[in-house]
Structure formats: structure tokens, C-alpha cells
Image (tube, rainbow, N blue to C red; front, side, top):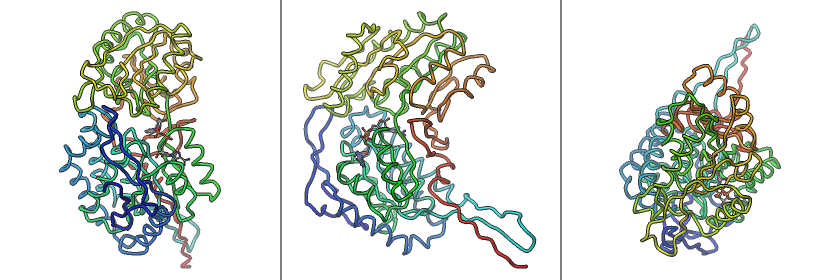
Length: 478
Ligand code: NAD
């Protein structure tokens, strides 16, 4: 696996022979290498996926695909600890989070294994003498470009959904963290997927990623990553009128009304902002608080943030390092500008004393009363930062919540049932959680954004419509 691409069921050297080194964000040491795949590798991978569609995979009945998906889920569970440690070293996330990611990944394959033969077409009442039916067919070769922050969860939802509908996949993982993707590729072989069904070409975005986008053999793209690159993906796919699912960035709000159960809300508010050191697309970094409880809740939040510790991923504390030096510097830039703008820092956690010098650590922090147009209230920071903002009444809460270019996830905390639904319906986001945040991950729950958070849905049954296309057959029998 080390330094290899997975094409046509074989682990091979990339055509160029080049590799990229893999750095541990917890201490800055290089501990592995991945292939630096390029256009020639992508071309081979796409060809092998096409061959798989023309072969056994293309003819396989759904229940058999389901058995393979289930077997892969089992393989992932059997390798839980190995995968979790690999992910923690590669991404820098605390072990507890990596274990959640492994189980979520396995759960996607289990869920889709059960769903595979339950996606039906329709028969449509039509003119005298006709019978009309619809079939759901795979797109063909699907290209998957994913980021480094949740590789296993994203593989589960995107590769899982695509394979369920009978597509053959080419995956380009994030160059900063590809190791668990490669391991899952290996496990897919153990599970018995035919050669060419799941190909992996690691490498740089501007090389392997762009080559995948430009390859005329790809029939659908699923992109998860930044809004900037997502827009590029859509433009490139538009040249060939190829459909795209875009899972992009966010600046998700949690709206806390004065009647909310603050004690219940507290751990959700903290975790949703700080999880994975804030490097989560759905991180709820904006906590909007109704004025009568602003002081009280701010104090509780500050106390909780102060207690958070950042340290090496394998020490399994509340917060790990950031993925890279560049990402750390980017977040520090945001914080520095906020200080210059007079934003108040209300609380700061700590970095443990034995955290290695070379790690990319930042203490989790919380800032208060951020003006609505400030960059901390508008831009995706992707660091361990919680922003608080006061509001007065439902109208202002909704206006503030909807005031960014993003629309991925929102949280509403209130006891008043009418308010819960009134507000939820007016929030511009793909998911709304009431008196919880994330609902435990929910592989069954359709997920995706509106506005610059993207379009299309993954997770749940809905993903399966996106990973397939309807064919209408009209029969005239007189
Ligand atoms: P990124 O956009 O820089 O990279 C994502 C992927 O795109 C990587 O594999 C990268 O190599 C590839 N890429 C980069 N340039 C490319 C190009 N020119 N052509 C083709 N591919 C290219 O994002 P990132 O920094 O890896 O991840 C963080 C971002 O991902 C955040 O904005 C986060 O919100 C978003 N994200 C969204 C979701 C979601 O489900 N909505 C989930 C996780 C992360």
C-alpha cells in the first residue's frame, strides 16, 4: 500500500514513480509515504472501472452487491483499532473521534448493504395501449475527490452510495491524509469486490485531482472539500455536462433561545465547535444567544472551553493538533486580526506540557460579541474556535443565522415547540437539529448544503437517487 496506487485490483507503483511524504501532525515527523498519482494513473484507473462495468460487476444482481458491501462493513469493524490509530496519526484527531469515524464508515456499508435492493423504479399510468416503467441505473464511472478531515466517514457515504447503485469508482483522497482510504481499499479486496470496482489514486489536487476532472471517461463527480475548489469542479464538469454532487464548506449556527435547557445544550455547543480541532465542515462555530441568557450561557461556555486540553492524537484528549503548519498559521491569522479589531477573547483552553514541539497545536478558544459582518462571523476558520453573538427575538436570530454565504447545518435550542418548527423552516441550511446537534452522525439522514455549502445530497436513501439516473421505458402494446 505504501507509495502505491490501487488500480484494477492491483497495488502498483505510480507511472512516474514519485511519492509524497506523510507527516504526523502531532509531532511533525514523517512516518510514511503515498503515491503521487498523475494523469496516466488516473487514465488507467478510469479504464479499469469501465472494464469492471462491462464485466462481472456490471451484471451483478443487487443482493450480491449488498453482500459485498456488508462484507466490507464487517472488515472495517474487524480492523477498528488499526484504522483508528492510523487515522489519528494521519489526521491528528483524538482516538475517540477516530473510533467514531471507523464505526460510522462501517455503518454506511451496512446501511447501504440493506438498501441495495430496495430502490425501485415506477410504473406510470399513461395513454391507452402503453405501459411505462422507470429503471434506476448507475451513472457508470464515478469520480470521488475527498478532503483530509474525515476520510473514513466520507468514503462510507460517497463510495458506499456509489457502489450500492452499481457504479465503479475512482477515488482521489486528500493528500494530507490518505492512509485510511488506502487501507479501506485493501479491505475491499478482502471483502471480495471484483477488480476495477474501487480504484484509488492518491496525489495532489492540481495533478491527480485535476486529471480526474478532465478525464472524459468519468460520468459523475462527488466532490467534498472547500467551496473554492468545488466551484472549479462544477465548472470543469460542466464542459462535458457531467453531474456533480458538491459537499462544501460551512459556517453553521446554533440558535439558543432564552427558554432552552442550557445544561443540556452546553456539551453540544462546545463539542460541535471544537470537534476535530474545529476542522469539520458542519462545525457549529457561531453560537447565537438570546439576550436574557447571554451572560449566563457565555460564562458556562467559557468555563467549559477553559477546561479543554489540546495534545497528541494518541493521548486522546479533547482536542488534537491541526492538520498542518499552514492550517495552523491560517487560523492564527484569523485570531490575530480579531485581536487587532478589538474582539474580546473570553476563554482559552490549554496545550498539554508534553505536546511535542513539532506538532501543530492551538489552544481551543472562545470569543464574544462578534459583530455580524466580522470575518470571524462570516468565514470558515477551520480551527478550535467558538464565536458567540447576542440576538433579540426570533426575527433577529433567523436573520443572523442566514447572514453568511453558507448553509450546511443549523441547531435550534428552545422548549417552545411552535418556535422550534417556525425557526427550523426558515433557516437556510440542509439540516436543522432541534435540541441536539448532529443526531449522533446519522448515516440514514440526508446530508448536504444550500448556497455556497453545495448541492446534492449524500447519506441515507436520498444519496442513492444522486448516484443513479432514471431511465424511462415506454412500451406500446396496443
Ligand atoms: P480542498 O478543497 O482544498 O481539497 C479537497 C480535495 O480536492 C482534496 O483531495 C484536494 O487534493 C482536491 N483538490 C484540490 N485542488 C484541486 C483541483 N484543482 N482539482 C481537483 N481536485 C483538487 O479542501 P480541504 O482543505 O482538503 O478540506 C477542507 C474543506 O472541505 C473545508 O472547506 C470543509 O468545510 C470541506 N468539507 C466539506 C464537507 C461536507 O460534507 N460538506 C465535509 C468535509 C470537509
